[in-house]
Image 1 (cartoon, chains in turn red, blue, cyan, brown):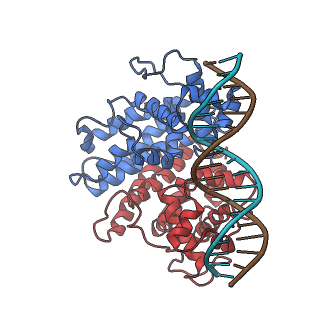
Image 2 (image 1 turned 90 degrees about the horizontal axis):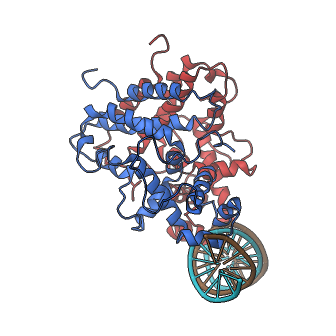
Image 3 (image 1 turned 180 degrees about the horizontal axis):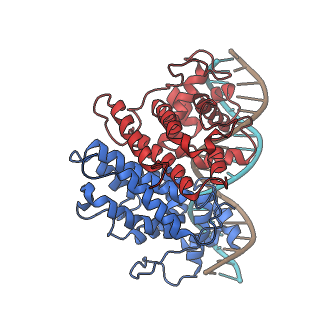
Length: 214
Length: 214
DNA sequence: GTCTATATTTCGATAGAC
DNA sequence: GTCTATCGAAATATAGAC
């Protein structure tokens, strides 16, 4: 009801090479399960969304879901993979330590902004179900995937970064999510997504401030 | 484990008149239940926190909880009341329409910042369990309490407010929460809460921008 | 690949003794 | 005000036919 204005399953962006393992043609049942789950996880939250509900809305039975996913958490993990497929390793320097330099943050956030805006639903879902994702990581599952929040904490614990920059980083990231949230609580007049992108960039840069003196 | 650096149950601030109905002396069992629940709702989320767990950590049995609260949701509602007791009606103009003027936002956010920082846990809990709170409101409970998000949506749907200001408002609010989040993921050196407050003010004002031309 | 059962578990909530 | 014991509901997950 709230999220009907969002784009549907815009997983693959205008650049290739983001295909996920196990996700073949775009309209097999597995993908449709994920699409429905994504909507429900945003609307009601992961915990309060039952498999019966997902199956019902999809026109199949619960048991059919278990043919495609071995558990409910497995569905959440698949959506997690979708998200990381979008981010790629281009952002947040998961390999190196490029993100340790606050000078590079404005450009990085610009990049992140585009990807998050183009795939709002995934990021809104991740934000709304942070507890569920952390529980998943705590139980040791979700191998081979670093979370966004893992990189987030790495920066927060880097002694080379000043408290001011840490606050800026944390606030900028949250501000971005707050900007995404606006697309659900409002009827965006026409396709003024570009205007929103500009305003969001403005807000994020406002948080990050001037790298030099102030 | 994560939230042990947070202050414990700082419900009543340095100004009086925030007592809640049904909350008498500060250390009766009812209050202790709420304190434990607050911690667990932050750490594991509302849904994944069982009453057995709350009771165990408190050294009583499940049934004892039901003497003080008539349901699990009732515990959540009580914490909701705690939060609104803090906010009072001074902020966000729940009665009038004072918050409709973007000119007044910087001062309002300064006020909000202090209250949120002094009672981080309540606001972090609210943010982390947004789905649970919305579900509560959807089911018609929580009478007599307007939610923060209700006022939030009112602003988003006010046609007199420009999209830029709406984005700024939404981002500023989220940025504030992002700033609170920093207190959980980091060991704040000493009691540098005042320094954090300054940096947060800086960040929020950065989002809100100049009211005049730009 | 999808169905009809059914197994298993956990949780919220209640009854009644003390 | 707290306890023991239990009920009932709902959810995840599985077994096996088709």
